[in-house]
Image (cartoon, rainbow, N blue to C red; front, side, top):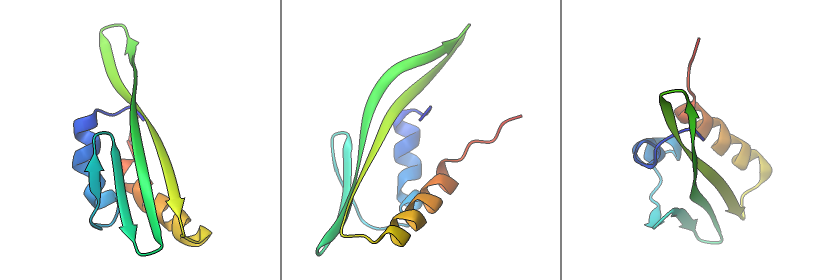
Length: 87
């Protein structure tokens, strides 16, 4: 993702539907009984175009105990909050 860590953290609570999650450095996770999810951020080299510098993050997801339809719904909501418009 082309996003700063700060902006990612600002948008994350709404993107995950307001469920409580724990943060351990660059790992964010939610546990609910026998199921849970984890999001791991890894900084990537900045993308530069002339004088423009864009911070980037590799975002990796892991799910445990969720059926495919709930994972798809998670990503629909997540994508909605992190969508970028452009011309």
